[in-house]
Length: 170
Image (cartoon, rainbow, N blue to C red; front, side):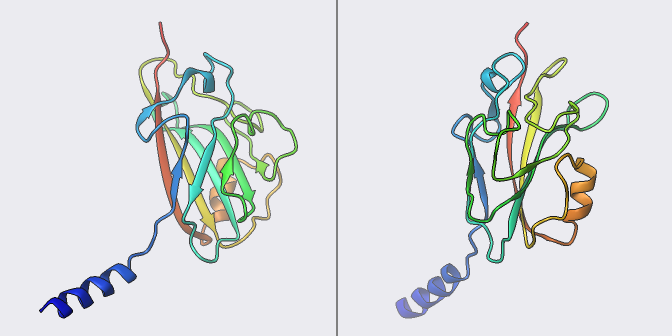
């Protein structure tokens, strides 16, 4: 009986697939994004790190958006063609157009860089969605979210989302 149970556990555990994970040292999943990363602070991009990318990953893409925005889902940051050897983005790396190992798309702030949370009212949720892709994308800097999503179609190996919240102080 013991040998049979051990064998079943061994089979189950060896077939468990690690799933990609996205974290930030600045905030935990479904927790408040500190003000320094918002329009009420320095408006710098938070540090992000990921692990367990699927086999065959040729690049990563990141979209940060706010589905609680009043008029539409508001895009705060678009990053793509992150090399597969990169497993993090440092704090403030997306806040300028400085030399970075990735391309940045055009946000709803009409800028090719991080645009921090700045909700007009209430608490908003900010979705940081990381995509593992099986190819580098044939896109130029300044691509829109719609163009990025269309180009990624059929190339997404896995995706994961980290959610942060923010509400402005009155």
